Image (cartoon, rainbow, N blue to C red; front, side, top):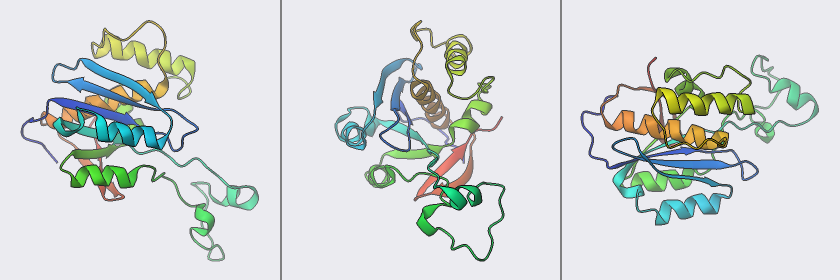
Length: 206
């Protein structure tokens, strides 16, 4: 899919966690890639309140990461839910949702935004990191990885306003999502990886 022109004034990235136990972050960029807002959330209600009250929402293109569902059950279900494990006929598919790989957190609220006319897309943050040349050279989301990612964003993509102290991993990922939203808006070429809960999950070419 290729967007031919940009009518949006703002580009919003949301790095979404799979539960309120972990932080989610939102980033708003303007047309000059200046960071206007960088904030963290924990609870679903707070994110939904941002959707309802933010002055940026209806003048923007919105890119939201798809969180992985990392909850695994005990015993045999933990063993048989591995990605490489073949499913035998004697297992009931989706019993207790143990085959579920992606979290559907906030999918209803995002669909509501889409129906209101907001341009909302989903993305895979790991694919974006590779496409932007921001690969994880260290174990993902460790302090070394975050420091490396933050420095790369400052030097390679000119986010000079980023502070010296280390930001949360979700905040850095939200910046990448917002970069991708701007890329889409200004005509960047994308591919539809798959549809998830009614919205396209887009990828950026390498």
